[in-house]
Length: 211
Image (tube, rainbow, N blue to C red; front, side, top):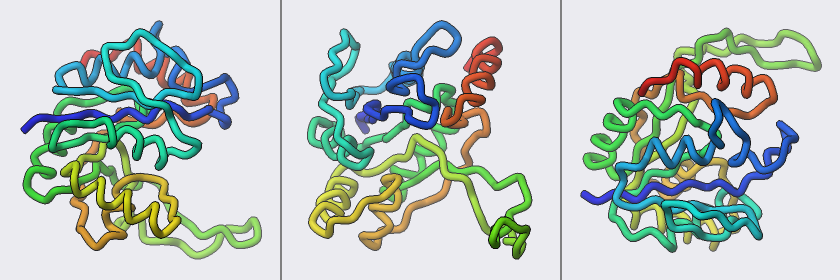
């Protein structure tokens, strides 16, 4: 089965405050370059870039939208393969074994997402105080890539647009349409660069990365 990898890379990185996140550099490479190298094996890679950005990339490019969901919609329009993986470029360290597990699940179920257990105690914040404890064994931290039958994800996006709904990841769109999404064992090394201190962690990881 041929695979399109979709990279929404139009985010402005406001929480880090150093410009568009895809172009932040870690270990001598931009986050976007890390992603392109990790998925060089794919049949097709499509990247959604910030408005006005033009780069010489070994991939198709489309304009990014004002939201992640709009960027993925644009990416899906350009994708040509029957299986799509949607990956956030803010996760520079992609573990091939986790991706393999994900793709196996997608071929069986049509939709799957990587996830890892919550390692810390979870509590409900109550007016700045330690509130009720939430059983962490029932919760997972969702990662990317997430994988889908392209037509399934396309229909989920069309439905979300028709209903005027915005979601934070693509698994939610598919689940909202009534299709189950399998959870697949992820990998903690595939963390997301979100805050300035995450760049320090990523620099350290880059020095020893060998996947």
